[in-house]
Structure formats: structure tokens, C-alpha cells
Length: 292
Image (cartoon, rainbow, N blue to C red; front, side, top):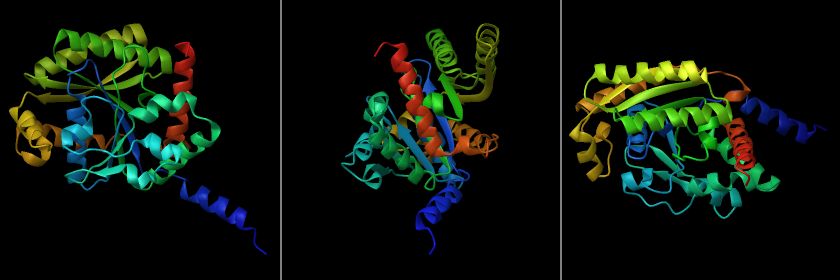
């Protein structure tokens, strides 16, 4: 008689051999830099290019559901605790983007018992086959780096040309580099007056990051100041969907196309269950460092 336990385990290993999902964390240098708006518009642009996109939001204020005019009933933490199914926590937002709120879950990660940890990992096993790209709208925290940002394959730092945003962006890079050992980042300059200004911002930040952090900061590009962003937000939509010919929308579409060309490892480290394991481990390291 066949050993069904062996068959199931082998089937699970085959199913999880490679992930189809790419994890990209997006963080603001300072509050108000527009990271959540960038997540929304990049997600919309990726959907328009035929990709299945999951946006995971770990912010408790000015959140992605708020921008989309939807109200979540559940947080990822509810699915981890077993009070709802993962499908109940997923929101189908206008434009075809799936949204998962995770602010409560992220705060609970360092304290998960082994049963809750297993459920958290199992949730991301399910998500592995539901998304091509996972965009993580990670919180800006001056004291504790986001565990989702630490675990993601890619990290985009969003800054504006304002000096306070540039300073805050560098401080966030420093925290991520020293706390979690991340040595490669991408820079997106939002609300840029022109490309030359955005490029100067990148050059200055990249030089300092290389010299003091031994970290690489690659230039993703710029998004111009565009009234279409605010006008679309008032209608609870992305500019990419509501005003596809606007200057900012065209740039977001270009950036989304470029993102799909980024190389991605096709090994165990790219699986979403391993992403969640790394996030849990990173959250515990950060909690120990903070004396929690």
C-alpha cells in the first residue's frame, strides 16, 4: 500500500519548488513622501500588463484600503489566529489589485507561538499561487525596521527632492543596512520637478550609501509632480486607471515594465513561505535588539 503521507509531502515539495511571486517592499523616506500612492499606481500598472498583483499593507494610518475607498473586515492577523479564512482577509480592490491588510499581523510577528507561526507560513503558501508580484507597502518607523522590508527580494525607497525626505530616506537605508544586513536598494524619486533633479538626488544618496554603508543604491527613476495623482485619489482610484495618459501614469507604467525585467532568484529563497519565515525571524531579531 502506498504511503499517503509520503505522497502528500512529495507533492507539497513539487508544488513549492519555485515561486512565481516576486516580493518588492516600498518604503517612504519620510511620512508624506507618497509611498502608498506609488504602491497603488505601480500595482495598477502591473495589472494592466497582465500580472496578478497582491498589495500587502502594514500601515495603520493613510493605508492603501483608505486610498481605494474600501474597508477591510479582517487583518492578516485574523487569518493567522484562525478567526477567518485567508480568502476572507483578501480585498478585491477596483482595478483588479488584491489587497491584504497586515498592520496587526506585523506587530504580532515577534510573539507568535509555534502554532500561529505555522499558520502564518501556511497563509503565504496559499498566496504563492495567487500572485505574480507582491508589493509590500511597509511602515515607516524611526525605531524599528519593517520585517517585511527586510524579508523582501527587492526594496524601493521613495523620497521626494525635499531635504527632509532625502535625510529620512538615508536614515531608513542605514537602519535596514545595519539591522538586517540589506546591501542593495532601489531609489524612486517622487514628485520630481525634472529628471535632472531626481538624478542629482540619487547621485548624492548613492555616494553616501556606498561610502558609509557599503550599500548599493540603484536609480529606479522619477515620478513627476502631476495633479492627476491627487485628482484620481479623490475618486478612490489610481492615476494609472483614472488618467492613463497623464505624465505620472506613463512613468508608473514604464517603471512597472522595468520591474518585470529585474532578475529574480528561482530557488527556495524566493518562495513566499520562506519570505514569511524570514519576516518572523527578522522581527524577533529586531525585538531582541530593541529590548522587547
